[in-house]
Image (cartoon, rainbow, N blue to C red; front, side):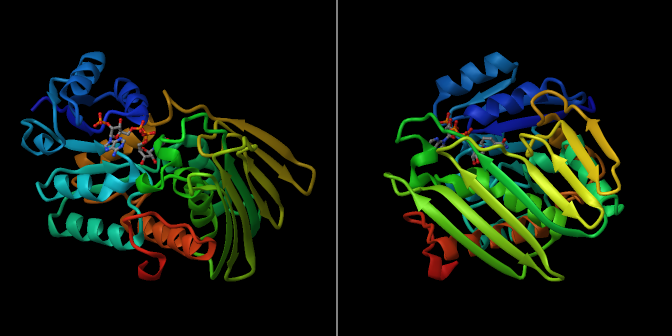
Length: 333
Ligand SMILES: NC(=O)c1ccc[n+]([C@@H]2O[C@H](COP(=O)([O-])OP(=O)(O)OC[C@H]3O[C@@H](n4cnc5c(N)ncnc54)[C@H](OP(=O)(O)O)[C@@H]3O)[C@@H](O)[C@H]2O)c1
């Protein structure tokens, strides 16, 4: 036993590169294996990040010797299949966001994790970013008083060709599941489960939701006003409005490095809290800690939270008419 956590990566795409860079910074963690649909791509990736095993199919990951945990970084539509592949072989999984395409799939994944007594976590890295954790702590401590409402947006101009997964409904493309998930996650994290959800989407040429607007009403009269886009760049900030003042998670709020506190009594404060590497370092360390302690899920990002998040995304889809071919129709969600 060398006390090193040996990671495997399924699907070495854009995000997998950033993740692998952060793995190199995370003491006690090492990239051990990478699996691609193409052996050449796996070999290139393995060579770039020093992984011992390059595998030419995802299935081979389950037989890889010396593996401790797998990071699933395939398109959303494959998260269920690739996560189940690992869980059924009792391999712990960190799976990219969104955890799956709908709540029914998330329930299947949770059931598999529990039946196999194997760790599973959604890679919602924002939850582990130090400035986001600080904001959660400040709100819980009542620094801005009782939270009354919040606004959050995430918009970027996706300069990709129409066949890219972001514009491909068959791969779960569109604003909601790619970036809209972040403001929805933030609302759930700060205000809890809404009682009412309203949503509207604007659809582009390929049929994906290019922009999506959401309005949540919470028990006790909290409001969240949220939006997401893959065709326009928006500020990408989150502002929390409390009875005593406001707390802003400055852009981009899903990877915040500074917070602005503005109290109605005139006190203002700016907190600078850089993250490490590309920001994925923190979720890597959190998973490593869970596995070291024999945990089957993360206390900070528990599976029931991921299920609630997906249920909310399903509610938004129902309201806004967002569908994916070959996936469950809205009526079945
Ligand atoms: N946490 C974050 O900040 C963040 C950021 C971006 C994306 N993500 C999430 O990570 C996942 C992957 O996103 P990405 O931007 O890395 O995507 P990407 O660049 O398109 O990479 C996805 C990889 O999945 C594999 N793949 C398997 N089936 C595929 C298919 N039918 N079509 C295309 N690729 C397929 C491909 O690798 P091989 O063919 O080599 O196996 C591909 O390189 C998404 O679920 C996304 O939501 C998270």
